[in-house]
Amino acid sequence: MFFARTAVTLPRAEEALPGRSQAIPTAATHWVFRRPLNGPIPEGFEEAVFGMGCFWGAERKFWQIGDGIWSTAAGYAGGFTPNPTYEETCSGRTGHTEVVRVVYDPSKVRFADLLRIFWENHDPTQGMRQGNDVGTQYRSAIFAASEAQLAEAKASREAYQARLKSAGYPDITTEIAPAGPFYFAEEYHQQYLAKKPNGYCGLGGTGVSCPIGLKT
Image 1 (tube, rainbow, N blue to C red):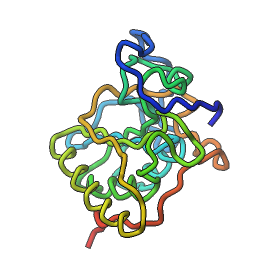
Image 2 (image 1 turned 180 degrees about the horizontal axis):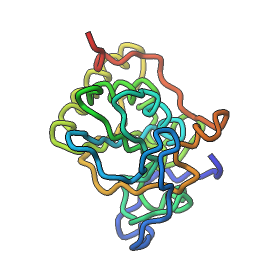
Image 3 (image 1 turned 90 degrees about the horizontal axis):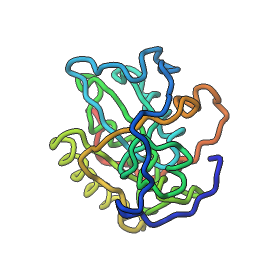
């Protein structure tokens, strides 16, 4: 990404930046799907939030699923600062990690399918980093929108941990927690790799397949 930051310890709430009461400006329309980026979720659809390191490449992985994905958005979650900017998040003083919000049709795409994309397309054992991207904003995370999602995410972690252990990897460090506020990132971050197909993508999986989300 643009700026090197090496904060690898999360701040306490009292140490976090104050943020602001108003949301920062973002895109009005999804660049790929041509739908309102922050529009209402269609009836019967669900949302999920994933942190996999740099959100540019992570968002692309989810919109590329295609049918069944209503929208994706880059943003910030998991911290304390309300309505943070990118620079504030990169400072390590907000507690947030870079995330992707996925709105999907569960009749076409299961949460298990999203979990498989999540686990297989980054290294969830690296703590406060992904490859050369170092900092609390790059930590792996799943923020569940329901108790069912939370339970399924935790079960998937155990299943994938067994596969990773067999392949010689250390313990998974992914944060799995109920979803808190999601804050949209700035306009230029939204669907960045659709606008700049040759732009930076720091994603790199382990090469270990995940034993969930495979339709039979």
